Length: 422
Image (cartoon, rainbow, N blue to C red; front, side):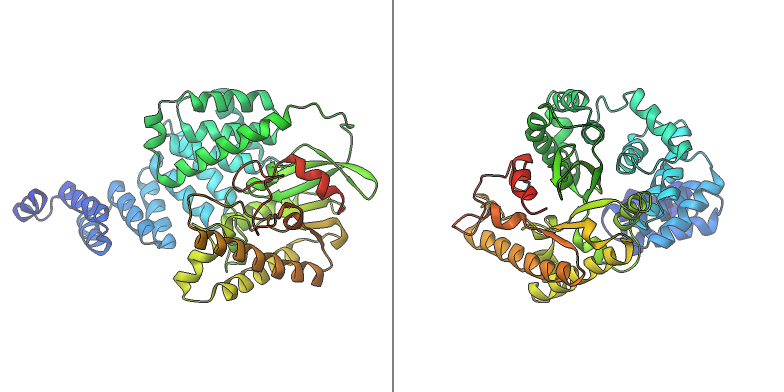
């Protein structure tokens, strides 16, 4: 009300118009927000703050192209606008423009700002591209690690632990998990729900994995690699040796954080496709692959069950369409011999006490449908199936508890059963 009164006294007051745009956006009145901001822009065209806020509102509306245009205009007016560089990078990343995103994060960091957002985004992306080094960007990434900027940021601490796990530096992993556990709990509680879930889930997962990983591996360090493309599940067997066709191979993890089968099945490019594609393109033609996506899609709180409700389609139809498009994407990108490609299905789900029987049954049914359809497409394309479902299944239709190390992931002990199928 005070802002509206101020505007009535001076209809061309730019700070008031900007603030009204910000408040309207916070109230999710996005059309009203744009009206105030566009009015401000018509009065003062060369104000970078106005364009930045227009970008924020279009981002809230998922109008990515309009938001990108607004952020770029803000940067033309103020090339050192740290927040605009970071936000532009985030949108370019979502669209699959990875190098453009890295450049924007780099510009944000080197502009001298203190916001951790660009550091987090840069760190996350570079960690996933360890096999795709871009020299001028890698230098910034290495500086971030050397400066230990993650000391008091929960997300950076966990990202640093993941990066160290991928690099097989288990001492750094343990140090960062310890650092995370010592944080003031208020810092973690203040995180966005999505970020809190990410941090706590990876902390718990790596805490379990690290005990297996520090056990000395007596196999030769010169064994050829088999690359494991996946989301968090590619860490389960990371840096372990496995016998394939009579020859020992070292499992090298290639993580795409948060990727679902759904992301590869969606139309157009996105960050998950782009990151995974860049990994594939850098590897020798004779490479062998493990590929494991789809478990996240089968969870109760996200994935197929949620998509089926939103799309108002039967869940088996949603799963069928997703599996077909997911497999088609990999078929079109994997210019490798089919006998060198091993797709993992989804393990039998743990019965989760925080959900009702009906919800647990729904998840078990989802996993069953996904695995059945996936198996059909794998055989149709002459790939190999690694069946982690059958040996993890108990008599009650859920996990037998022999191989899971948390509610979602199998642990390294499953390798013995996996190896029998290779």
